[in-house]
Image (tube, rainbow, N blue to C red; front, side, top):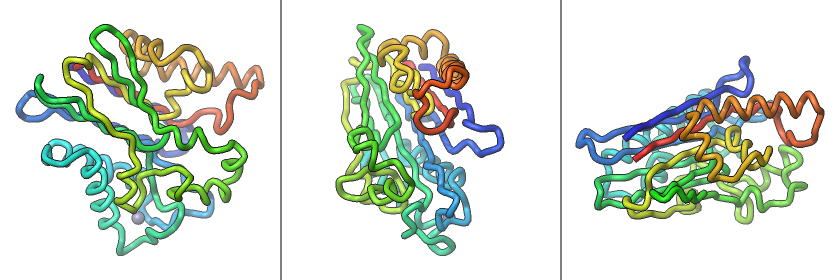
Length: 263
Ligand SMILES: [Zn+2]
């Protein structure tokens, strides 16, 4: 089994709000992969004295710990408990009812021995890729954000009205109930050769620049590693900026993180 992780901040003067971790159990069978993309708060603040990097570290740490220690819990229950723990750790100091309370997208993958399934959970716009032994790649996406009209997301105020609201999109914030909204599934271990997780800063190679499909993206990850994919995204962004194309919708560079595990 082999893990590889890489990350690159969108801007050197800002903290990287992505977070990723991989864990191997003491039994030597199976593993866990966690990837989070913290949502950047607006200038008006988020009601939290700690900040998004603190939040993702707390939430991600809880997800890794619970995935290993509570194999009796589903990934949905693990996400709910990790959100609850994280909320409890700053309920006394921060306004957790703030619409922009620190929040993150989540990808969580857990697998055990040869007879156990590969379980997955995806919430909001980070991407999970599952590769079968024959090379076929399946992307698992929570596409609620993509299905919203572009106009509805044009301003912070209009996007905030859809944040963790019915008919909108959902992120891991302070309410454990949001875990029920995650896209989940499980695949027999024999049908998975590799898994990969990408924050939207890294998945731009496919969904913004259309350099290839998810299979091609997995091929880059396996051949050049997560850093190779991120380097390609950065080169495309720089080139698009020089040519002043309209392809960059939001920020020129976003925090970009990619992780791959070969089972
Ligand atoms: Zn706080």
